[in-house]
Image (tube, rainbow, N blue to C red; front, side):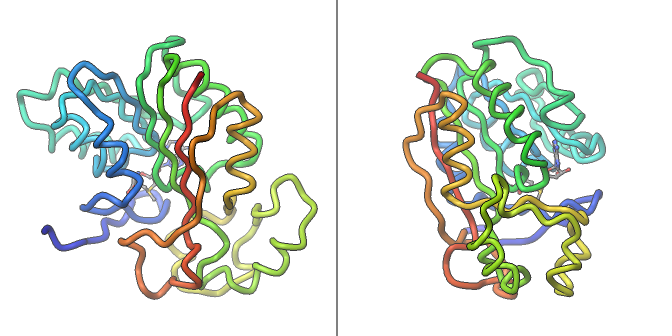
Length: 233
Ligand SMILES: C[S@@+](CC[C@H](N)C(=O)[O-])C[C@H]1O[C@@H](n2cnc3c(N)ncnc32)[C@H](O)[C@@H]1O
């Protein structure tokens, strides 16, 4: 087994990894030769590279063109023509035809959107997925050590986006926050399920858990991540 290693992003958007988390592994297992898939927030290719190795055509999107440039250098010659790079911010910069994608993977990126961007993103994904196309999402919840003082506010909030924190320094001085943007949209199973169900997705499973590559310093109560698997009818 490859030892887990964190890879810092070049734009203070957290870190990526050299090994797949549980949800990313499910996405890669879904990828088959002839499938066309989209990896949102692909970073240096932790999931895009195994998806290519599985034979899929991979559209890799990331807000950092530098991340994607690095990803391109890691692709074996024989897979190069199956990788299409989409530098730019999801959802506003991503252009793909309707009904063209078999599976979408978004690992540790949706908490960097606003609520409105997430809603628009869900609509875009519903449009570009083929019928029966699958969606694999994993994101951060408030149930992480750096956000523990925010949990009571989150749980009692009546807001549509209870996990929106305009300035994370208001709730925590944890050193991890130096590696994140100032604002964050923490999600849970209730909010994530609502966004995708309201967009017309059939939500197969939505649950909170602790992903295996999460650093120990931010462990809280076993609900540190939220994952969703859904499909377009
Ligand atoms: C925490 S890293 C996760 C990378 C990888 N998916 C993983 O699971 O390890 C987040 C990545 O999402 C990208 N990102 C952040 N906001 C984005 C957006 N709105 N559109 C596209 N990419 C974005 C960042 O540049 C960064 O590469």
